Length: 134
Image (cartoon, rainbow, N blue to C red; front, side):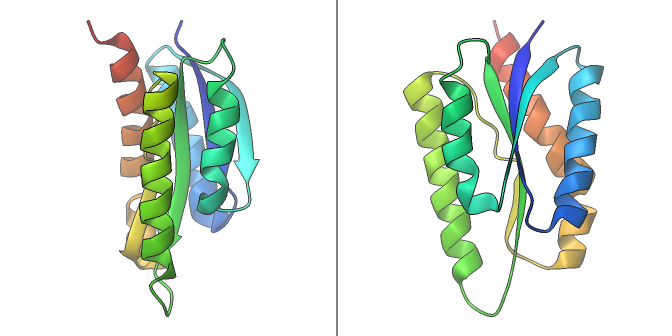
């Protein structure tokens, strides 16, 4: 059985909580198992928790869940690009797949709501597919 870790941002939890539920449903549909979930304050903190999970020899890959909604500055873009880059670096460093299940940057609350299912499913599918490739 494929064993996964998951990191969920609590910021905008009305959205990320639903994304987390959908991701967990998808994991079960694919016959995989989440053995540890770490909740973090926001998307910016996701990479540190991912690193913790990647160090665990029982975890084969990590699903990330978050949303970065556009505010009045370019802060969302800076955070999104920084987090995406770090997640890629961690995946390569540990030779384990890490998903980018974080919607944004430059999206509204309404756009993020519309992407709940899509991003949650893609986040799980990408990790599981990488682990099951042959």
